[in-house]
Structures are given as C-alpha cells and as structure tokens.
Length: 264
Ligand code: KIV
Ligand code: NA
Image: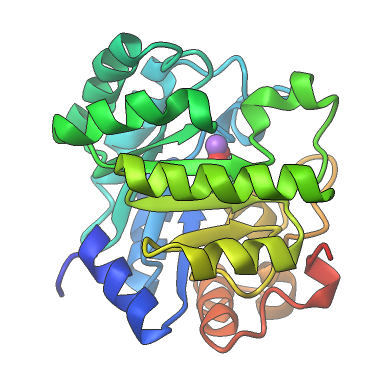
C-alpha cells in the first residue's frame, strides 16, 4: 500500500478524483480511518472543542497538538498526516519554525496554518526549510473573535476577491494544499479552478478537490450543535467503519456535500 503524499493528491486533482479527509486525535480512530481509505488525517486544533470541551480553539497548545500527533502517527500506514499549528504558535516566522519543527518531529507530514497575506513569508520560510504547509482560508476559527462569531466568509464581492488573491498568493509562496472553510460554493469553485494545488473544502460546496469533516460530526457525537455543512454518517450506517466508508463513497461520487450542506 503506497503512502499518500502531496504528489498523490496533486495527481488526484489532475485526474479529477475527489479525495477524503477526516480529523483524528488518537491511534485507534486513526487506524480505522486509515484502513478504510481516508486519504488525509488532520490533528485539528478542533480538539480544543471536541476533546477538551472549550468554546473555541484558542486554548490549544503546540504540546497538545504534538501529543495527539504522536498518537495518530502510530495508527497510520497510508494517509497523509497534517498537524494544525495552534493559535499564536506562528505569530512570527521564527515562532513558526520552532513550533512546526516540534510537530514534524512528532510525526506530521505537513503543518496547517490559518491566515492570508501576513503569513506568506512564514509559508515560504517553512517550505524552504523542508516543512510542507497547508494553508487555511475563509472561516479561520482562530480568528473567531475578530469575525464576531463562526460566520460564513467571502459573501460580498470584495472579501471574495481578497480570499481568491490570498489563495493564489499562498500557492505562489509554496503552500502545497489549501483548506477553505465556510465560504459560498461558487467562491470555492473559483479558487479550486484557479489553483494548481489541491483544495480541500469544509462547508464550501462540492467543487473542491477534497472534503474534510471533524470526526465527531461524522459520528454524531459532537456536543452541542452540529454544523449545517456536516453530516452524521453513523446514523445511516450504525457502524463506525461503515460510516467512514459511506463518507468516502459519497465524496467520491459527488453526493456529499449536497445543497443542504452548502452555502450559496
Ligand atoms: O481543526 C480542525 O478540525 C480543522 C478542520 C475543520 C479543517 O481545521
Ligand atoms: Na483547525
């Protein structure tokens, strides 16, 4: 079984083959997701909410992400493993390099950072030094207090254009993947079309190259509210491995996300 790398995902994009990503935080779930065929696993700073019970992702530390990255790494044979850089761990390029090193040495294949133009120098420096970067635009949850809530981004023409410009700039700076979160489907489609690198969407419609969901949403055990763009696959399958396979199949066939999961 050959390992998924950024080259594999690039090939999938060229072939028009949709791929699937899930968050994972421990070895057992990671192993199940990996063996069922999820291509990308993310140790998301969503763990601050779904594991630690916080209201947002801001309290998460690099040590937290490193710990869960080590756990997930032991469960993976095939998937690409991305680790989130938490709030304020990459405020300067120097901090980013120190903290990204910790996550790579914990077993990540790539790190993910939230933000646009201010981050370009960091993305270039990390990539030049051997640390692949996944960019993250749109609703970037570490900025929830700046946004004034978890709100769809890029609804007006000016903000939509800014996100497109930032996506292109991230690719030019060396980013090898891009996550777009909670943006209108036509905007996500335009970004996916404009970029050579694969684009992974969450709440961004069906046109992106890949989809990502938080595992707790897919398994219907998120406390509080389940976002509209998510889908509880455990409900329709009754079994965790079948739920993961259903998610993979629906993404591959373009069934998920459907209109009810999409912002227009
Ligand atoms: O932290 C996370 O789980 C994420 C995904 C939702 C993209 O960043
Ligand atoms: Na995240």
